[in-house]
Length: 250
Ligand code: PEP
Image (cartoon, rainbow, N blue to C red; front, side, top):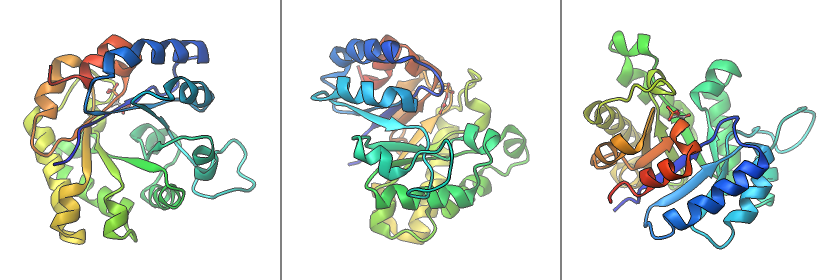
C-alpha cells in the first residue's frame, strides 16, 4: 500500500518569522496524521523551519537546486549543500521554473540524478498546458516528460522519486482538474513507468496531484486509486487550511 504524501510549496513567500510561526501553528494540527507532511520553503527559511520541525512529523524540502555539486554558478545551491543542513526533499522541474527559468527535460534529469546521488528525495513536476490539453496532447506530454525525467535511473532509484502531476492551467488559477481527469493522467504516468521499469516499480512510485488543491476538493482527489496525495501551492500558506488538506480523510 502506498502512503499519502502532502507537500506544501510556499513558492517565494514567508519571511523567517512567518515561517517559524507557521510551523508552530501547524505542528499540533497534523501530529496525529499517518500521512507524510512536507513543507517546501524558500532557501532563506530552510534553517529556521528545519529547527522548528525537529522532533515533529513535518519534513522540510527546498524548491530547486543546481545539478552540479560546486563551482562557478553564482546564486545557485547544490544538492550536497541542501543535504548537509538536513533538508530531505527537493522540488525539481516545477512548471514555474520551466516557464520562467529555462528549466528543460534535460536539466530536470540532471538535477534528479544529483538529488538521488546526494540522498535527497526529489518531487518531480510534470504537466500539460491548456493549449496542449485542448489539442488532446495531455497523455503524450506527461508521459514524455516522465520518461525523460527518469532516463538513466535504475528501478530502485525510480521508486525513490515522487512525481507531481500538475496541469499548468490548474496552478494558481483556482481551476482544479476533476478527480477523474487527474486520475486518468496519473494512471497514464503509472502505465508509462510500468512499461519501462516494470509493474512492481510502478506500483511503488508515489504520484501526487497538484493544481488548486484546497480542503474542499482534497478528499475527492486523494481518494482516487492512483493519486497518492498532493503538491499544494496557495493553500499551503495558511496553516489551518493546509492542516485540513493533510487530514483530508477526517
Ligand atoms: C504548485 O505551486 O505546485 C501549485 C499546485 O500551486 P496551487 O496549489 O496554488 O495551484
